Image 1 (spheres, rainbow, N blue to C red):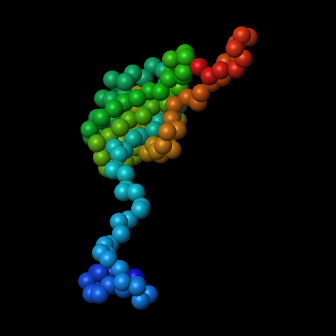
Image 2: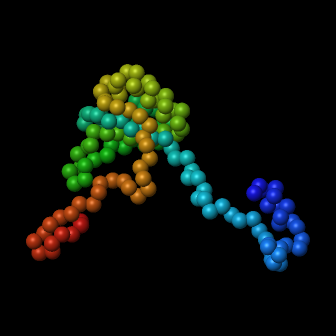
Image 3: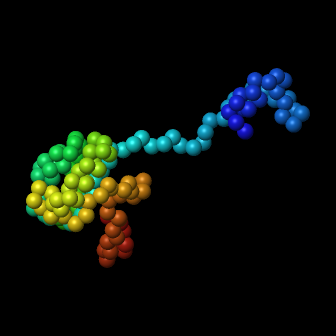
Length: 144
């Protein structure tokens, strides 16, 4: 039941299990998947005004460390901003420093916002806009 016990059982000769001779014995490999590599931490900001530009947001957050990406999600079809912002940092300490300092001032480069926090990872394969259904008279329902 321990690694030492397993190694001892493998090294014994002759190898028998319940009185039956067995051939080569090897340690089993774990069936558990390897842990996912740590992704770069992202900050989530809601209530972001339309006037805040990517360059201005990036300049604000670069005060706290390396900013790898600034992303304003947009509505599907209209390309109008959703009023949220994601900022990807080089490490978690920089992201936390940016959150605390930005919360303290209540603004990003003079622009107010609603909330700021570490972004929680979404479920694998569950991102973006859900598939929409369009009804056309000739074809009935079909996804586009």
